[in-house]
Image 1 (cartoon, rainbow, N blue to C red):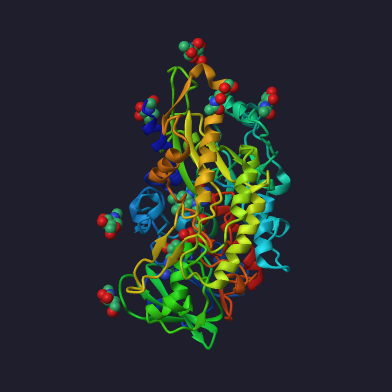
Image 2 (cartoon, rainbow, N blue to C red):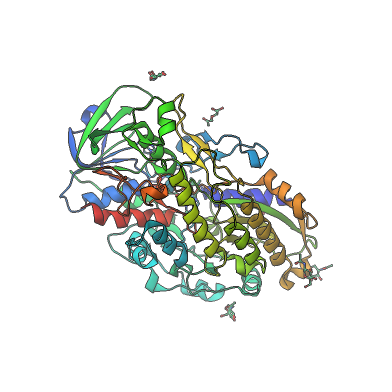
Length: 596
Ligand SMILES: Cc1cc2nc3c(=O)[nH]c(=O)nc-3n(C[C@H](O)[C@H](O)[C@H](O)COP(=O)(O)OP(=O)(O)OC[C@H]3O[C@@H](n4cnc5c(N)ncnc54)[C@H](O)[C@@H]3O)c2cc1C
Ligand SMILES: *[C@@H]1O[C@H](CO)[C@@H](O)[C@H](O)[C@H]1NC(C)=O
Ligand SMILES: *[C@@H]1O[C@H](CO)[C@@H](O)[C@H](O)[C@H]1NC(C)=O
Ligand SMILES: *[C@@H]1O[C@H](CO)[C@@H](O)[C@H](O)[C@H]1NC(C)=O
Ligand SMILES: *[C@@H]1O[C@H](CO)[C@@H](O)[C@H](O)[C@H]1NC(C)=O
Ligand SMILES: *[C@@H]1O[C@H](CO)[C@@H](O)[C@H](O)[C@H]1NC(C)=O
Ligand SMILES: *[C@@H]1O[C@H](CO)[C@@H](O)[C@H](O)[C@H]1NC(C)=O
């Protein structure tokens, strides 16, 4: 069995999850779906750009009591239920610019293009970051911030309905959970559930991981703690079906005050002075101009890739960029499109040298219930848990000049924000309770190691020559050499794990890069294979003070405007040490209370 085949199946499962059966007899009701711009009413209380993960969550909450009217404008279409999630027709087709520190390789920028947005195509891993990571969001936000762990936990609980695992399964596989950190709100239909089956081979893998030196084993990773734990997925355990913003916040909702128009693109925000009054939008792939008025607020939920584009095209962004694109400047906001971060990963390939090692699950796209987001087990750990060299790395990072690895001509406020980021991350590098490595455990030798924090910052800006085209995505992956140092430690950790006595008889053999590849040679190998995204883009409209390169304030209002909020992944100032969907739902829930 080629380890190549194996690593492809791992990557597939992490990034695309399963394909649904082709059709279902079920018939859903929907919000009022408008086909043509002319059906859109002249005015609504709220207009939301983007029917994605955050946009649909917010629209559901804002329309629930009937007091407010809401229009959601979505660029893509409602894919027929049961459509194959791997179908390129429900993803955007965007590539990054060549990455200089990745041997000029480009990266596909995968984001969902359908009602439901990225929650319709994601890997369904349903996790949260740790307490110090959200406390960091508050630290970067300023003294009055309410986005620390205690301030976000109630909205994490509100955002999903938790279904505990089957008791026998839990007992056999050491699955533990803490009901205190989960919610079971009857009005919440995003489900967090476990599969009803796990492969027995997971047991020796669990036991080997539990024996790793200093490995913490929290009762529940969702309680803000690092370590080895089983996690649920965003799955409806009754229907055994993907649970996402469309099934949770759109299907079966029919309210006179809730309109959704698909196949239309929000081009820019309309203003009276600096107060947002509505949006300009167009039928997809036309230049026909339509407008709709917002009595209370415009909310941009277009996702991390497109939210900065709408802002920049509305005259809110870095001055030089807008000047170059000949867009009149409404508000100079240097942080729009900057601070871009994403998780980065690669696969360390192994085979059992003694062909009779523990046999892992036969992960297939359909059928096998454990194939839904894989076997739900991982180690999410801090640098001090991985290596005694953590202090050296933290000190080296701390000693950097904050501007050293940022793009030339970075605005002083963005540099000031990076300096605060650097201070926070030097602290997180020394914490045993911050997830720097995610080691997904699949019951197979070797596999993926993922950097859950990156210190290289990228950009997502409009193309000044064609501001309406897809934006220019630059991960600037590995531009800060600390990210290379950390990936080296990730690989070494995988080597230590595969060296566990439990696997000795199977003689694990590293086939790529090879156990003797170390030092600079290992770094060169990383550059040649790194994938700079797990499709978790964030921070292009970061929640930070304006003087720190931020775009939105603590209530997610765009600095310097009235009546304009951003509610999606782009407001996260730093990566949680976790896949991002649960944090996006939490953000939308928290803000839905601020808007009314
Ligand atoms: C392949 C993949 C795998 C992933 N795996 C996981 C995982 O296993 N676990 C996890 O926690 N997270 C995962 N994620 C990440 C998670 O799904 C995202 O962080 C989250 O869904 C983002 O939500 P959002 O609301 O910010 O944006 P989205 O959900 O992407 O919504 C943005 C919406 O805005 C629309 N839009 C954009 N521009 C315009 C415009 N100009 N006018 C109108 N509409 C517009 C888009 O079409 C889209 O519907 C994955 C993501 C992907 C893509
Ligand atoms: C994606 O875009 C590339 C380059 O523009 C093009 O060659 C390719 O055919 C597109 N793929 C799909 C599935 O549309
Ligand atoms: C897992 O559960 C078994 C059975 O309850 C128990 O013996 C074992 O110690 C547990 N392992 C760990 C690492 O907790
Ligand atoms: C829209 O306008 C732009 C700029 O004038 C032009 O390049 C483009 O071809 C037009 N698109 C359509 C579909 O008419
Ligand atoms: C895995 O399962 C699929 C579908 O049941 C089957 O076609 C395939 O042969 C299996 N692969 C192995 C290696 O057993
Ligand atoms: C594997 O374990 C052996 C014995 O404990 C040790 O000598 C060796 O250095 C270890 N190798 C790695 C890569 O950790
Ligand atoms: C191969 O693995 C099996 C099962 O773990 C073990 O019984 C056997 O002794 C191993 N053989 C060698 C040569 O290591």
